[in-house]
Image 1 (tube, one colour):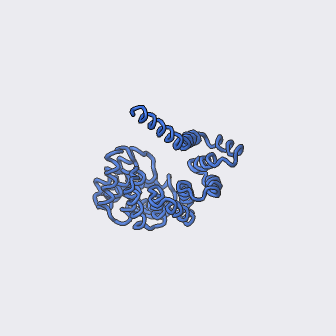
Image 2 (cartoon, helix red, strand yellow):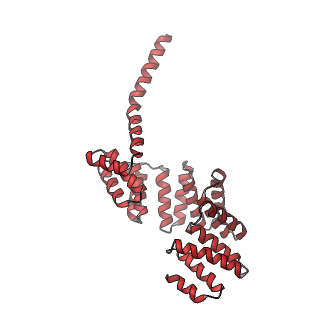
Image 3 (cartoon, helix red, strand yellow):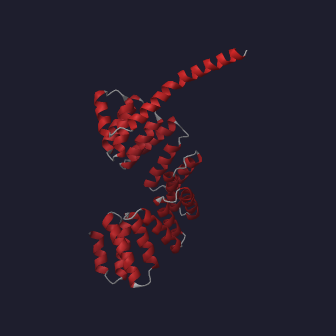
Length: 285
């Protein structure tokens, strides 16, 4: 009897191996392809244009390098052959989102959720799309659902915090950022988000401390400089303190000339220093 059971177990193990072996081999090949540079993947795609795994990884490699048009082309080529792949539709939605092609992103992400209704990555990316298109209440629901489904990585939690901020739910935002920081004390985005949250709660002292932590982790970051400069300007009493805030804001504008809020705050700082003309010119540099 014992030998019969051992034989049965051996048969079951062999069947399980036969069933799962192709999936394991495919996963191992995917890891190898993902590690290749874009040039090598492009060469492989030219040699074997019908190899969808190669073209998929080539699309992702282009996307990681910020080359969104070739990334879109490769992902669409794979999608034409495999139209129901939820992961592919999710990735395509992200590439469209990064190009600000919002309608196409929406179609792709909804397609991913049709293929896999409880797909946390697609829900989180749909939330990011709705943040980008000024729909924070919708974004909040989608990001909350992604977190409930187990997607609790720092980027998703920080985006949820941003959604809470935009809906003026600052206490919920504070809890989310503090949750990230309990596990990742050196997470610059979480410190910056917490700084902005304390601003919303009218606690400029805590906001300044959080912004200083973010700046220590991300020196020279335009968004951090703008946030800290704005907080310092609001707290400033003496001309020396206003000048300190003005210098931070000027550096933020230099690093990101397209940030209108930093330019506005810089103009306010210069006006307080009695240089209103220079402040107005700052909008047009």
